[in-house]
Every structure is written in C-alpha cells, then in structure tokens.
Length: 65
Image 1: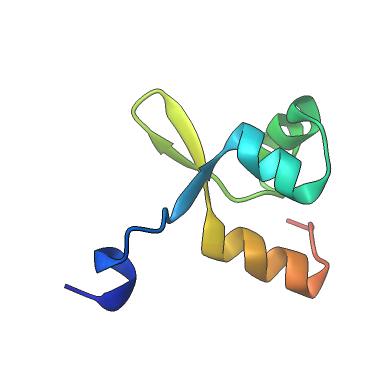
Image 2: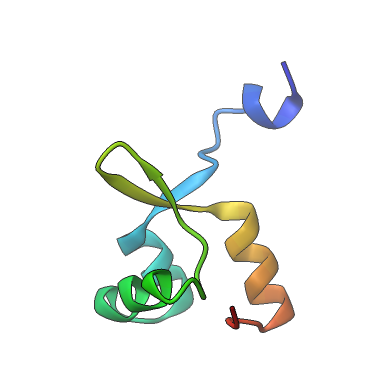
C-alpha cells in the first residue's frame, strides 16, 4: 500500500471544507464545480474535492477550466 493511502490524513474534503479553505461561500463552490473550474468527484450521492488537486490549484492561483 502506498504511503499516502496508509496515512490517516484524509485525501478529500467536503465541498463545505473546500469552500472554507478557499475563503469562498458554499454556493460559489458548487457553482465552480458545476462549471468544472473546481475539481470534484462524486462518491455515491456525495461530492468531494480531492485535496491534492485543490492545493495545486491554489498554489498556481488558477481556477480556470
């Protein structure tokens, strides 16, 4: 098993957590996801934001599709 997966740190954030991390509101986060400008994965009925992709986007200062 890889080191990242065996670590207990979560790999994904909820949309609310991702919005707070970006300093934006929940509605804007969902809008950006719908526009494919914020990465998200559907797990059943739940949307989650991959933490690594979000951090990379924030480092690059890029929210473009």
